[in-house]
Length: 121
Image (cartoon, rainbow, N blue to C red; front, side, top):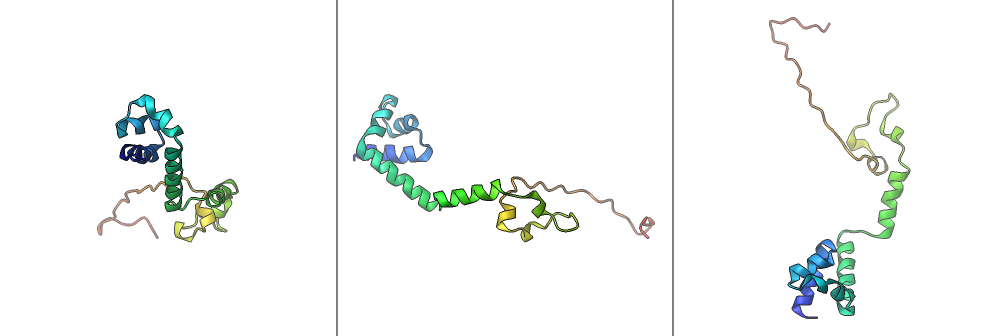
């Protein structure tokens, strides 16, 4: 492969957009389909994608496991016996996997000075 073709492969692996990769590598945008179809470039792209998946620790088994956790999540497991939300650090991986968002609301408490009587017994 030429250095320009290697650059195309590198650019393609960034966003999987052949047209933009061709432009960024210095080719005319109409060359994108021809470049992707070329066997040496297709092999280099496949090898690059395999490296990306390995670095990201992504495998079909891992992805399916995460999907299983989400699909079979039971929101009731996020609460204790008294219906209080469990602290995040106490959740299992199974329980935490089904949480998509955590929102923290901080409320300002009214300060009670020494001269003001407390309403608490």
